[in-house]
Length: 320
Image (spheres, rainbow, N blue to C red):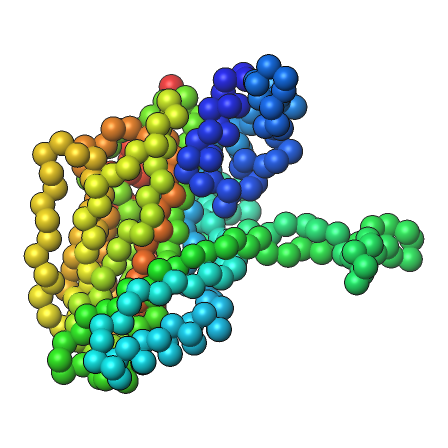
């Protein structure tokens, strides 16, 4: 099982799976080097929890106020000088959420009218000790250590690109970019998953007062890892949600390169816009982290889930 443990830890590193501390915890292995240069492990087995994590999305979290204000000031200054605003970045701590199955009183998973498994978004929490100002553990009247439940957070780096609006757009509109992170890991079958077509689906609720224009939806980061510890770097075709106008033409899928494509769509203010991300020429993988950027001043994420081809092949596969 040592090779399995090393493979799990390597894939977690390649795919930046540190967001799933409950799946790749520091308690499971010690990677310090021994004298012969081989990793020293504290255990010889790896649990299913460490090799299989559900498709999870993290999105619509509050940004740090000072970073947002600084970005707005830079945008206004560039606009007054007649310049095109440059891309900006913001770093913030966001609460981690995950999709979990909806079950009945008997613990059976609930399904919708179409027979699809129902899920809900919950915040990931952890139990921590209560400490005083000096960092000492607090105890109750019986001398028992006090604990509290707190949300698990992660650090998110958001790169903001200026939206391209039509000439008739409201000049007071200020874009504010956020990132939706999707991640998934399944090493339980000890091999890769192969599928083509619809990968991820994101439903955006377009704001009522959003100006007409082209709003980019871009994949800012794609960490994809295979079972044999290869990190794939896919070709990315970004897209947009075009409000009140026809979307710009997009590049076609190449013949052979592993490619992720954000499919551009047209919508109107107030619409629910269903955006899909497809893939082609999949070399096979068992884990990924994707960061998808959008303008949260123009839209909010109403729903997220796996695309039909990804769901049928990987998430709902029947293990022999």
